[in-house]
Image (cartoon, rainbow, N blue to C red; front, top):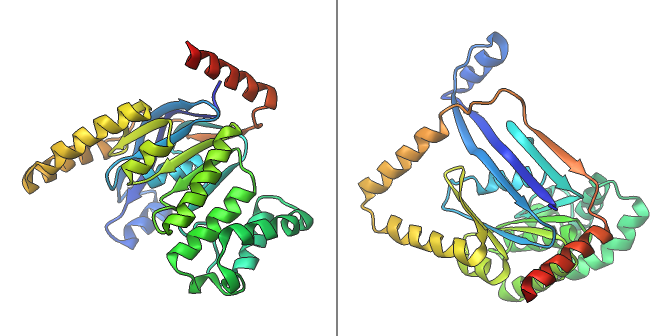
Amino acid sequence: MYQVKFENVSKRYTLYNKQSDKLKEIFFSKAGGKQFYALRNVTFEVPPGEVVGIIGINGSGKSTMSNLLADVMPPTHGKIELHGKTALIAISSGLNGNLTGLENIELKGLMLGMTKQEIIDLTPAIIEFADIGDFINQPVKTYSSGMKSRLGFAISINVDPDILVIDEALSVGDQTFTDKCLAKMNEFKERGKTIFFISHSVSQVRQFCTLGLWLEFGEVREYGPVDEVVREYNKFLKWFRNLSKEQQDSFKADKLKRRTTVVDATELGETYILPPLTEEQLQTRHSSVAVSNEA
């Protein structure tokens, strides 16, 4: 039983040298850009109640992964299955800078299909969790990155998603707020929710996550128990940092060649939003995990 499933998922972008090349392709069907795969042939399954730490050096495709998980954009190839509602927490993600914090709460709620009354009922809890004082009535464009993160986290956590995607949102807050977020995330985990935690902080990933997903230049290098994945990732970082600048550049150039090689697939990718797992299914999952742990 899984809550999230990626099957041979690829996300491709076209890189243009100048804007006119893009216009030529639109109007004359003349390809003028280089194909670049942010993700290539990614396959994995995540059972309910797991916390997946997604790690990798800059440019490995972590933010693309978060956008696919949150159904912000479709895959180019492959199939994604998501059981239930997803919420993305990233710095200022989904926030309109010209609106106040209060207006953003209402906007986000309406976008999620909530009624006016449901939004009104949730607003006090969101304001309390965000804890940004009178700034809740000020335009978001006046907020610091930490305040944007607080508001974004408070909104997403209180709409009670089945799948929570956190993309570097805890990297800008103070320790008190981070601890409050981690406590809330633990509460979600205990309720059988699935969480994806994207971070450069290997220590936070090891502390909080149950599974690790290591992305290396758009492909899955390792996926499994978090301690094993983090251990292998740290070995890689040590090896990579000991290379000379020329060796590092050569390594990256070799990986880049793979990311510009066209994937052998013709069908367009799709994301399927499936019904949330039932309480009975989640309970069955908890029982099987408990038996496995006792064994």
